[in-house]
Image 1 (cartoon, rainbow, N blue to C red):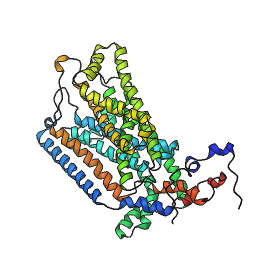
Image 2: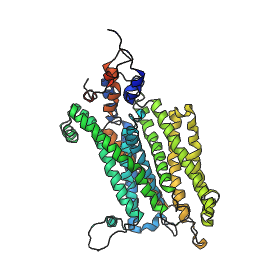
Image 3: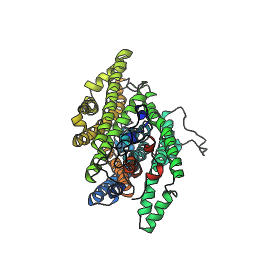
Image 4: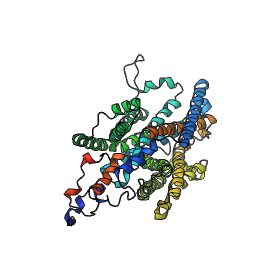
Length: 484
């Protein structure tokens, strides 16, 4: 049979990203059977999984017991002393909210821009988003002296005839976080449905098969279902995208709306958003690189995917570094001696040690990603991700503690020292996050099987021809989940 003519140059720009690069993406994956076999292998329990889950549960128990002790003794055991009444709890709250932003960025925004490298890492990022927001939501309650009264923040007709102050950014946080959690969880679940159907069809245990049948919503892989699925996914991606900008902007208003030196500035919303995305990408590397190595998923999470994600990490690091410099410039240009004194104290004074940890981890070390060799070195990417997580936590520490401990009146200046209660609950939050993630990866695929098969589809339909007519390259959704 004669070879088909290559597509005309004027049609080249019309080819979708997955189709146009199908011959270059996932070269080590040969067929659908290999996809099912290797990705579903991650669902098998291993000794390492049990050990990690056990450690995570122990950390959760430690954090819960410490919280119970704090409720009994009062919040004073957590190191709160005037004038610093926002400590580790609010720092960690902002940290976990930031971690959750990478999931929406990778799964929604990069989906809208048709970035091919998102395909094999977005499932991990989406799961990370849901569990990070679940973790963040605990900390405002931990911060309360009477945590069982947390529902007073919610505006509803109540017996006290009192309503929360709608002008308070803390009130805005409640709605922003609940909205973000709802939309992120819905987006996450909708994307899982085709893969849940695969698990349903392969499950032999009657109880688990029934559960998967309910969760799959009767998915039968028909053309109509795929048409509605793609439209719903596109709508949710477009709907979730503004949340990346709005949610952490609202969190930044907790600080920007105050008159405290170092807080009252309009740069905070974009500054916080960039920092959130930066820290979230760091956590994606922290999770995906060990998974890639342990389950031998190098065929799927390729070095090119990590290279592209590292470039995004470098970009957000640059934006964060620019925000740091802009803060100093605005303080100098303002002529406000309180602002100028605050930033001088931040870098060379009482909190210089924390500020330099922040600058080195978030600005200096990521400069190594300008080197392609370092971007493609998975060991360095993993180590760097740990430093990014540390640096972004200290960024929030510097913003909160340095400002509150050094306000306008010198007689109020003080210090802040976290206690073992703060440390135990901080460690417990990581146990809580990883416990949920480990349970998730035991039940559902960490890589989207349906989208990987979509990448393979043109290759499967034309195994001997690398140049095809544009019409032949149109993706048929009914084949993306075809059985072997």
